[in-house]
Length: 113
View (cartoon, one colour):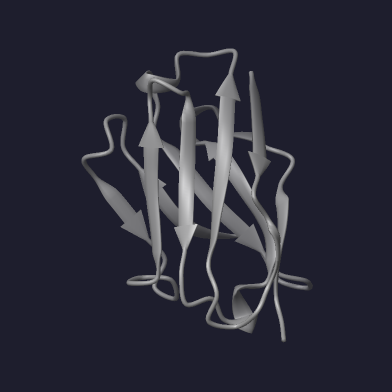
């Protein structure tokens, strides 16, 4: 089982980024997926989660209305579209296969002018 995140980088406040998490080694369409983030000195927190077919989503309070989680089961990929980024969104973003507790390696997002 492998989860590989990509798409992180440096962006100015108010900007956008789209993260991707490519999954392999398991039946992707059979599992819910999530994005978490960890800011320096803080605990890892849930950003968003999505059900098997993408019909149900859930967001952390600080990102509601700005971030959108989606998935493409044909491409074994889950996405996180991040708009109106703020400096407090800075951190390492991780993809997680929830039911099996498997994490990706993370991708750094830095929001700064």
